[in-house]
Length: 249
Length: 314
Image (cartoon, rainbow over the protein chains, first blue to last red):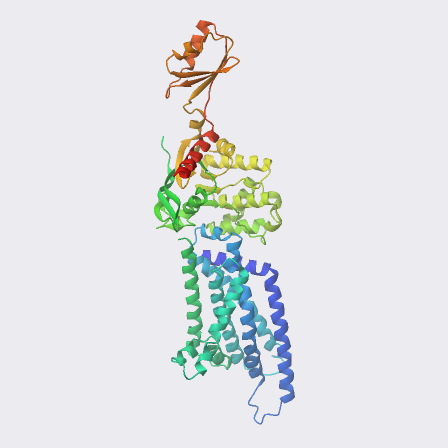
């Protein structure tokens, strides 16, 4: 366990020592702030138009803002995961971990945990925007929290898939393109479900990354959705361990 | 006195597809030994080192480190191991201190004793002045030293160094050699190199690998005092070279001119004393008499090129 934490700590430190993390955070925050202000202006203009106040500001924030965030994060997460193993392989530093008395599972979990530290930073920045409204209006914090939890889980799943793709190659850019492609395909699986002629369309709909986020975004906490993201992440972490173990043979 | 065996490799074999990189290699390393691994490019040195450090699984055979199998009890075996690969595995964005602290933690050194371990590794590798610099900004020689510090930070019983002096300047090379020699007193070291004098200067035993097989495995002292095949002698006046051939142990005498002779000996005989005695008796004016010992370089060239010639003929 201490091995995992040591690796995670150094990984997180290295993520934030690179300008990439700061650039990504800055750009994401800028775009999200832009969208947030737009949504607020939109809400203010429409205030009082609805007969029974059926749409509150929490719907705007947790619904539209965090819904938009998923698209942005789909673009950004592959950039954060591409280095994890590909760069270590390219710089011949993977040997440091493979000849130390730590197991491959510990290495993979350590790196993943370090990445989750970055994910947490993104989630906190996302939480800062509704927090700014806290003093001027009544927010449904439960609903915002569900949206943030969904974002965290979704980024965790993105991260696990990206970690796996990064372990396949020694070129970080290929890892980025590969994991973006993989995530987009899993995301878009639900397109198949719209087509009536495809067999098992419910299965495809269920497997899609996006469907499970939608209910959380609406404030519905369903443990099946949580389990879906955990299983998705677990699967790719396991595949990463298998892949790195294969390398020795 | 037989000291403790720290590394034992039994019938180590590695295939890459159809090519056989290492073929049934046996290797034993005792405490306090420095083993030099020599071989032409592509002979299987690095592959052997990767297998010894658990970075590559052998196709057949087994590696025991301190009695622990690298396959069955990898963690325990790796705890006794320090490894510096061909390219030092350093993170350019960390400072020397941060990096060494991380390495110490990976090797399970408790948080309390880490600063001391880092300090002593830095002292040994001459890194005290660059503690707070980013590794990426250091020169190649310093990065190599950081890599070496990483390999010895947990004071492992076994240290494996893949070409540790590549890219260093002559003074650094001398320092690193002195460091390796000092480490060899309390640890066991395996060292690969292309530089033959380096092996001769530092190692206590030499293993030459060619085409994945160990073709030579002897103590370095054996190279120095090896059974010689010939004697070089200079006489002021030798009446007849054939009188030399009558001495016991002398096979053939070749006159090289100007009183120089090359005397080939029979097997492991040493007729030097007899020659000196005969020279005094006969008043030949003996000026020089020395065994023509084979140097490591000659052994290396002979063993590795003979095989190449055979391969060409086949």
